[in-house]
Length: 74
Image 1: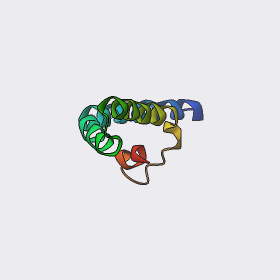
Image 2: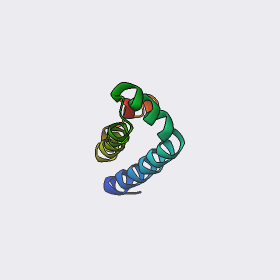
Image 3: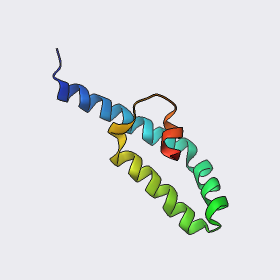
Image 4: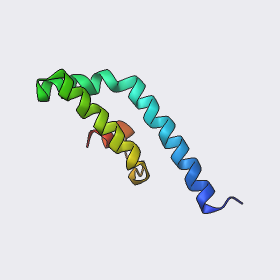
């Protein structure tokens, strides 16, 4: 039977894979929305990058109660 730390490591690896998948699939959509809000492509790209960096830092807070994309948007 795996130890809790081993289970946690697997969940983290899965979440990182999911985050990467969302990033690759939806980056342009996130960027379009950010550009519409900020009216500056450079600032928008920085904001999207920071949103994904924050999602990586806080990935353990994701409880899977909804889509990962929605959690990143918040």
